[in-house]
Image 1 (tube, rainbow, N blue to C red):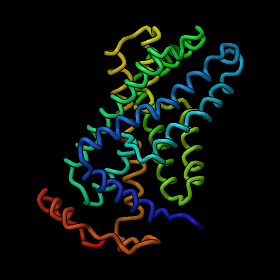
Image 2: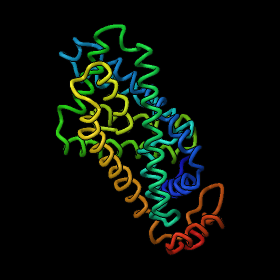
Image 3: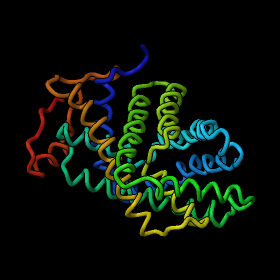
Length: 295
């Protein structure tokens, strides 16, 4: 099979998390800002596919499926361009932390910078490109679709329901990223990303970065609530649920299954991973016990 094994894949996730921990903050923030518009394009396509009132009444499953099949283009662009998505960083950084390659400060720093970078980029895309650009003002059907999606995500469900849906959403998103890392060819990576991502969209689960487009766009178009309601009712439970879904159900679980009690993990193009001098120095200065030199 021309792919990395699950053990090799989670090893690569740990290495990616280690690399992200040592990334310059200005580059991390800019890379995170670029993620917003890339995912925003997929979100905007999903809104446009929902602007079909007759089908919403008579065949809602069909419209949801069409939107779900179009949405993954955003995550494909993010993964293939190396942009920083907060929700996938929950998997990378958790794995690297549990593997004792980074400290808790590294994890917190990465999550805070990537989260606010994603937020800044998405709000820019929502306001400038689709808002002032009038993308959804050609017809009242588009405006109504934007409002309807925002209401369905932030107004209709209860707080705990949004939290639980968010666990499932990032479980699928991080698993999509996980199996894309196991793939070696670009076409295989695209296929690996597409179907888990389409699944979470078809199930109407909640992704905190995607909702940074859907709900502010709905507010822009006249949804019956404001920014404070969005933060409390949607942003907070979705954020917490996504962190749990990606960090625990993918990062921690696969770290425990494949990296605990094992020797060095060899990849096809190199031997077992050896910590750099800078990484060993950082681990020792943080006061944590350093892992074995070979993981």
